[in-house]
Image 1 (cartoon, one colour):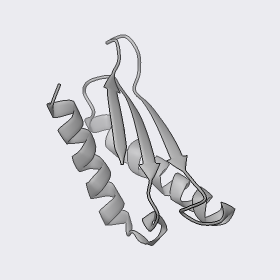
Image 2 (cartoon, helix red, strand yellow):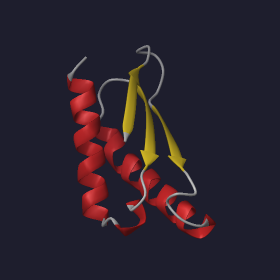
Image 3 (cartoon, helix red, strand yellow):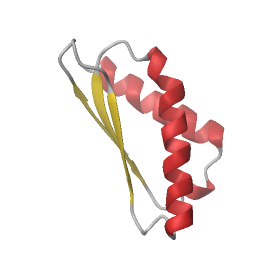
Image 4 (cartoon, helix red, strand yellow):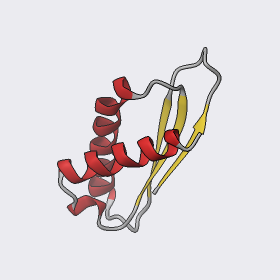
Length: 84
């Protein structure tokens, strides 16, 4: 699940992550958070509009592959920015 808000043009993009206990224990949650942060770091150069993004990891996120996480986050950001 992803929420996006545009920012003023002079400010950089920011990403936040919500990973609850429903995803798993502390080690699992931190792994999911690190993977999501790496995905967003990889996508950041393609984002032309300054935005705030909040990514909420759903249960089962820990079993998703890197390619799945990357494509879903990139697609969701692209759709959200394209609507504006």
